[in-house]
Length: 331
Image (cartoon, rainbow, N blue to C red; front, side, top):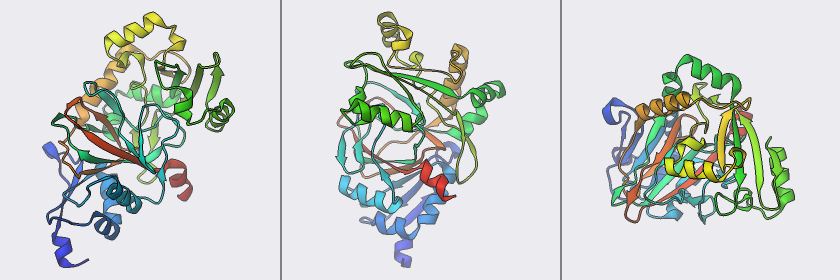
């Protein structure tokens, strides 16, 4: 790396309002190669991601999904397929997907990617191919700060009991089990559930109901920091728009809801507790405006992400990497 190459990149560790989320690595010379720069500075990138929680690469020469995949190859040796799905996405190329395909006028709440699974990606990376003309930010929140912001009683109860996730794969209402598990075989879906510690119950030929209990609080495998890492509020029926949740509750029995969450022992999560979680998340939320060519590396166990409503032809691609089992196995 020459002095000219070094001068072509600026690193900003302090974000909006003095926060460090996301840190920004900005190329100041047109055409700066992100693959070369990241390859030569991988330790810097890793350290910054785990300290700040997310790193925004801006101004580098990334123009399409092929260039994005090349960036992923240098960021990680293990880019993942999207398994045990909970949201609709389309595969653009191997390991590269569209971001969640929800209507543009809807919010997607803060969450840590696949925290309801037993082998989540420790990193999720986004690429802005086309920025929205209005809105469409990807808000972020530091999950370490979220845990610290909760009352001691709330944190203790969730840490002691965990979160129980109940899903019903209902044709026409939620993802089918075929799409969620990427198979048309009931036997293969059942086998996946058994491997992943999921209780599967066939209600009828098409409706599969699953239960799983996962921890609500985790320690990052590298930094050791404790973080709020779960989908407790995200999958709770009350997090849906009021008219949607009321319609579902009027049409379905509670056990048939597409998604719902409970404490790990099956007891309901109190409304005031859910409001506390939402309040802390809102307090910790920050964001930035996308620019075409941006790449955002999110340290999944440290930072939650979301999506704001938008106008215009927004196209954000996503890739997931570094499964937790591999990271823990390497320690």
